[in-house]
Length: 446
Image (cartoon, rainbow, N blue to C red; front, top):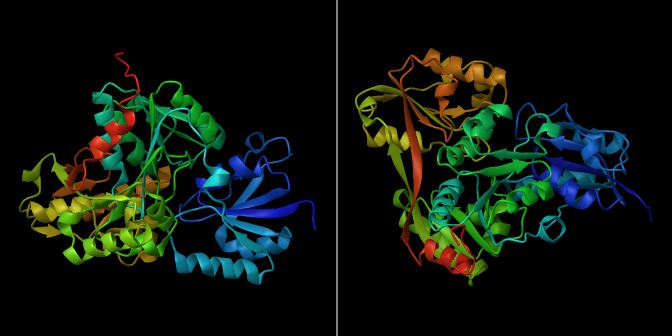
């Protein structure tokens, strides 16, 4: 038996770095030779800094595109490949396992016991079964409730370290200038900006032990706002999991969303107003079969439009949250709902006008039609997004991105912003469940 096993971590600039720091950094028998990256553009050809890797490493750890996995297994004489990213169909997970094993290596996945941190504060986690299920509106709703009840809330977000990792070890966003200071991509702004706009502080980064310590230092309660359908990096006191009524069955078909679904204390079946009754019944039946002790509630996301008159009767371009449309697999979002609700004359198909990496995204995700994903992982991609919008020459752009697009667009372009808000439809009150957890915690006023 070897004393040291050579490893590759398959990731997407998020859980991969967390798993390294919580398990591999302190388990020298597993030596990480490389990371691979996928899902997110412009994150390969980087390296994981030696200063974050720890004393067992005398150099940065390289990051390669996942398409090179087969040759990397051979080049580094790899013994184990660990999967460390989310929102994959179960079948695709096993295709990856088969590829790895065909190269002679073992395929593995770490679990909560190896990777979850423990907080000194109560932790409410909001995770999901799929990307785009509606986690953040629920997290923001609960954060506002807790703050209004007098609690200091430390919101922690699943990582999105798409830039300089050394500058992103611990990030604290409290004012809009913080978003500029950290040179946030559009995708990062989609997650952080709604909290900042509502006067809340949100924490993120690369080293989540340090991120958690920073959040605990100024909080009574930790609220975890998950990414994709990944499980929480911090062990939850109360686990709330969002299932999407527009994608019934996905709660059992995707990794690690099924992990969340099976472990949830509360399952929120979301978007029920636009779903078939049979879809809601499917999710309820799966919950009863896989997690009978969970409380099940239903909810919807109500849309709020700042200028409905700019939609009615006009030629519009709908722009939606990028990750929800791409690896989340949705074909529409809040902007499309608003266009239909307020009777837009025409929804313009942006595909003929797309340029650069935006055009490539349409080729990669052929299910997208009269909708434009708000992709902005780099300055160049943001310029291409802006150029695509300008070339569409519409009367109104309906912005369904959680981050306002006006920062990136020509001010002459008329933009209507659409946002979601959480509305519970049935079941025991989510607010009461949270209140039961936090009643014994002294408030900041006390």
